[in-house]
Image 1 (cartoon, rainbow, N blue to C red):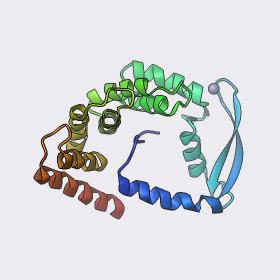
Image 2 (cartoon, rainbow, N blue to C red):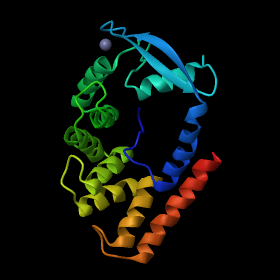
Image 3 (cartoon, rainbow, N blue to C red):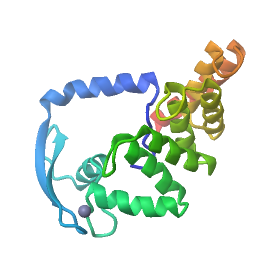
Length: 205
Ligand SMILES: [Zn+2]
């Protein structure tokens, strides 16, 4: 869950489309899970090109569906959210970021962009780069907050300075279009170049 972003840059979305086209060929392995805390039972489909018994993929699918497997216990989205909420209220920055994501997706909690933006905001103020990026996106799109390009540029800037490629790319776009910042092709190029360099590095890894 941690590190999930509200939107990633266009290039990555394109790659995603490419792989999702392959979904037709995929096999759904349905597995049953029971919450170790409340006993809630459900079936979760794990998509793969073959019948899976891969614990890593199972864990990823569970996480995507809001389940978590901390320690030996498996917890349902509601119980997961409950635990995360407690930590988030206690000021844990990772939990705040995750809580934002749970509210954004409506996993284990009622879907609310307003609450998502609030949790992202708390984590962002603690300097969490992904939260800063996500908050920037919420301001850019006007989701859960009033659309505000200056706020978006501010949070993209803080995440970009921490080396977040998506934020660098978005910040470049703000400079290029003169949204929230004065128009400057020079500034735009600086951030686009940094984002591109970062992407190459990530791909090489
Ligand atoms: Zn539960």
